[in-house]
Length: 493
Image 1 (tube, rainbow, N blue to C red):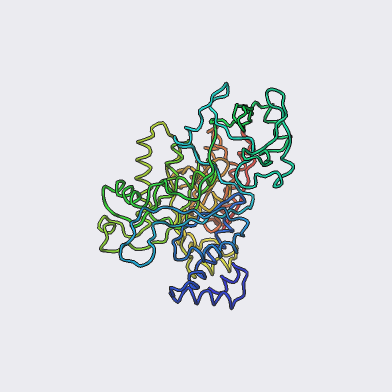
Image 2 (image 1 turned 90 degrees about the vertical axis):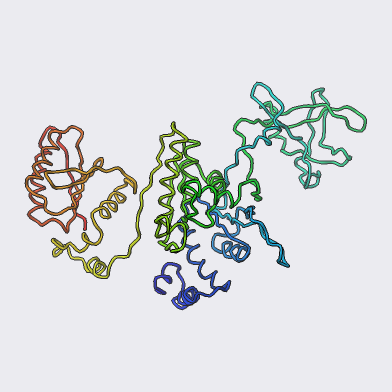
């Protein structure tokens, strides 16, 4: 609603209504598209961690508009670059304009000091490292600055004399005779010398042989700065083949992203423990690439994918294969990809699973119950239990208590009554907790050394006052026993 949008974006009600009017109109204009993107990108920015980075894929049609919008939302100082990616598409022959075989990825960080990770060196890159000493293979560059801003007047403090191996004083003079400058200041040069990173080689200047300094850098652990031109990756045609192979040759999804593309983004975006969010899950290429990357470097990256339940066309191969919605394709791809990764990497024992959550709006009745909540009349009201279900309530509590969305809790059978526990918490959600169930629970506390949940969390809708009091009285005896546990009771609604 306009009211909700106004609150979320801190804008006036009139402006919020104008945004909604444009987006709901279905207009294909640039203005409507920008209005559609504005609130989503603001929310995306707010979801980013302090060291977060966002990659936004876009084509020619709105690339320039998106750049201006993102400069405003994320800040120009947080712009990391515009990746130009070769898609591998063939351009038409009949058009009078220029063909397009590229799309773009705008990259912004949450923090202006953020730095992307370097990429692994290719075999071609490694061929530069021809030198070798006790520290390994190395390459070298001139100590003198070359290229732009290489003159003495550009950085006067970087013009100074150093001693060559024969004890002569050497200045950074270019081969064409003008005064140049060194790459580093004097103090940094002395550190390079003490670290044995200065390499002296003989060269000829003006028909005279002289010593000339170079800076060594070693192959071990070296990466390279990502280029903004990504034409070394496989294009969209390979992406189509990749998903066909997973689905037994069936074309279940149009225009998937290539695994290589997402793998590179994952590599340069964060460390091995990063959390990746994809707003448009689609065929789950992001999840596939992330799990594959984890299996290659023993990472522990996690993913969150969001996908609307968009219907598959009834005349599509996906529909004929039994997929009714796009998210069903994405879910099945993760399962198939995980199976393939496990088969190809038998020594990898990382997490290849996922949890599936559905977003659903509460009914009006449930919302009224929540808004007008009164714990004195709540007992026996099963409205929320029936609507949300035990798994939803339990998952909410596990997340609240710090166990996350993928915790491994245990179901506990107490003579026909099901309770749930993990670590220090015991959850009693279901109604009809009998005296026999309480007796079994008490016995478990007293006889099983490893069973020690100290926090008993109770779903207030399911328990009357007498049941709660009986439970508390029974568990008081645990505090007096050998374990001498202090049990905390918490009632939640």
